[in-house]
Length: 328
Image (cartoon, rainbow, N blue to C red; front, side):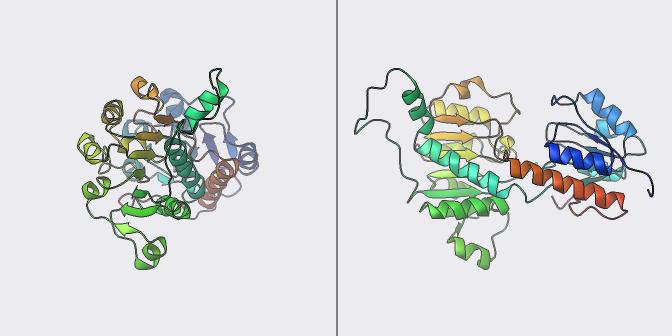
């Protein structure tokens, strides 16, 4: 569209440098509030814009896409995952979808290790004691946790983030195991000294820590269900920094309450921010508000990816991070 700036609608507040650059490049509508858009507001945005920039809080399904105007040609998602968007329907309607892969790998892997350490070493419990009024001093048997070194870590999903978790865990002396759709190539697997398990059942039954690092797809929904959770050791720990839907949250809560698992560190939840109240009440569970990718550097890099995708599209080319149905 030579001589005319694309009309772009952003659905949430983004870091200031990203918003400023968008204002320079496009005819952009920014958000004054950081509240998620209502479904009606999303529909209105999709009716009048060339591009919308949604986030994971925006569910863009077939019914919403049916209301899109003829101008809408690109959904430039601010996020690596696209399970909030019906990509197949979008493409059928001639709307491209892009995302922001790769920039959050280190941040998410760091948070995964932070959760492991926090649960295994009982850090939040120690903070509550130290910040309270009842601490009477050090004791040889108080607040005992466990070492990470020597423990077996089972990684569910060995993509970029799973491999970054493995690298960090090896530095702590953990033994790396993984389950993945496909076995890694030897040149990737061997430096990690990782053991591949084709059977998820067999892997989880032997692990001290299980880290969920796979995306949410129809095939991974409740992959860790009640039956698989019962296979795990009673002192095993689960960490999830990927997608909440991969774990049956009710079954996990029951297992933790019954003492069938040692603990959990969760940054994501099955029903968004509606966390099971019984899960909140457990002392051996650490809950975070989806902070895995929450670094200044990561958020700006995500915005830069969005800018590149939209600018490339505006110049008449294929966005570099185009999402193709069937290859997700």
